[in-house]
Every structure is written in C-alpha cells, then in structure tokens.
Length: 347
Image (tube, rainbow, N blue to C red):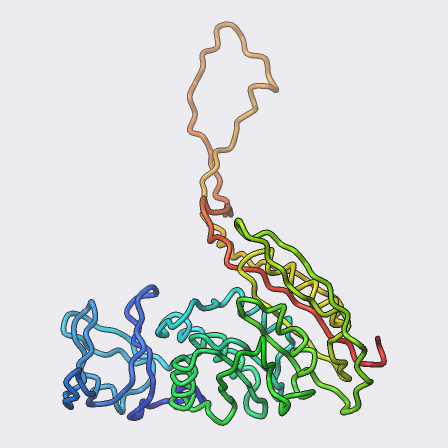
C-alpha cells in the first residue's frame, strides 16, 4: 500500500522505487520470494547495472535509505505518481508530467471530485487523478482491452487505491459510460482513437439536476474527409446531445490536429463552450556564468600624440549569469482540447 499515504518503514508487499541515477530507476515489490517460469518458489534477487539486490533485505528498511548492491549502492524511495510514470511497465503509450499537469489544472480536479477517464492504458494519468481526488473522490476509468483492464485493477488494489477507483471494460464510443454514471461527473478525460464519438456520452455523464428537457429530433449530415485513397463518411449528430444541469469540464488528448478539429466540432454541437486547443512543449533553458570583457574606451576621450606608443593593459572582465535556449528540444506529443459544459441556466 505504498501509494495510499506517507510511510517511514518498508513493509512486505510494498511497491518501492530503486533509485540508481536520475535516468535509471526500477519499481519492485518488496517480497522475499517469487515464482520463476517453472512455477517454482525462489528467493527474489533483483539484478541492476550496479549489481544484485536481495529484495528481502528491503523489508524493515526506512524509506530514503541507501542500500548496498554487489557492485555499488542505490536509494530506496516511496513511489508517487511522478516516479511511477517513469518506471511503470508500459502496456500502451503514456502521458508525461508536462501534459498531465495541464490536464489536472484545466479539469479543476480536487479532493472529492468525480472523474471519468477513458482509456486507462498503463494507468499513468490514473494515479495522478487518484492523488488529486482522494480521500473522498472517485475515479471511473474505462478501457476496451480486457487484459489491460485486469492488470490495471490489480495494480490499483496493490497500491492501496482500490477504494477510490472503478475499472470497467467497455467501448465507450459505442456504448457510453453506462446509465449509472449519468449526471454524476465533475470532469471527463478522453484518450481515444475517435474521441468525437464519445463527446455526446461525456455530456450526458457530466453533473445534472436530475431533470432533463425532452430531446429534440436528431439532425444528421454526412461529412466527407479524405484518408489516403479512400473517402471517410462519418455521420455527426447536430442536436442529439443530452442536456446537463450543473455542467462540468472535459479534456481530450489528440495526437494530430485533424483529430482535434473533429473533437472541437463535436464539442460545439453538444453545447460546450470556451473550447481551447493547447500544445504543451517543455523547454529547459541553459543557465551559465559567462565572463564578459569590459571594453576600454578611454582612448576616445584624449587625443594620442605622435610619439606616444601603444601600451597593453590587462582587460577587465565581469561575470554575468546568462540564459539561452537549448539547441534542440522535445518534439510534439499531442494536443489537449479543453471545454466546459455550462449549467442549464447559462445556456
């Protein structure tokens, strides 16, 4: 239960982070024995680039302590969402801290919030949501892949977060989030191949007052978009989005601008306002101390005589702290499309 709260001593079964260097960390379970491929119980010895570690020696050690390896040493840390993102087993591509921080800020997630997430993937963003909404909030996370759902559910329970999260297997683009989640969510996050198809379901899931106006007849039109040598025909509902009451916020992650444009159109059709499209690019400035020579200009004040010779004097220099952009920077990750569904009285 390493993620549930601060701890001082490592207990058996805890998930811990073995810190070797800033770019080299490992997540391991503090258990004395494991089963090998032959299903035999053996002592758990973890191999690193600095030598081997008998994992049973971690039990009872204080978090933050330095532990001895056969060819060096490491520090053992209590995991948090930031460390988990850097060391988790990748089942899918994941989001990283720059995008995640903007998502949490834009969705206004706080303790007690009810958040819907689709899809779960490797659970990187889910751990950030859970830290933000605990102890009284709840996360409903969806993924269409059965194996990923089972693994994510197992990890949440092992990390002591099972009481605040519900993991479901569902294709939300076709089936929605379920009637039991209608009108309860404060925020919805979508990371899907076709998120525009889930926008009407998201509008239905955001908080309402329990009284919805009658639905209008759906108006449809066909949109044609080129995709390679084929033409994509997609039906888009213009007035079929259900109305909500209290409203809420939504964020969708899109790897390309074409997908983001389709999301923006669907958001407008469903009554969302303040639609924004954001790209987060992290730039780390290079800070250096430079010695800058001071230019001597006294010779301009007095006229030199013909017999006077040039004399070399030591040049004075001053130290300045300078900042410059790096020669290269991290490339494009994706676009965050954010919008708000206003309450009924504001529409």
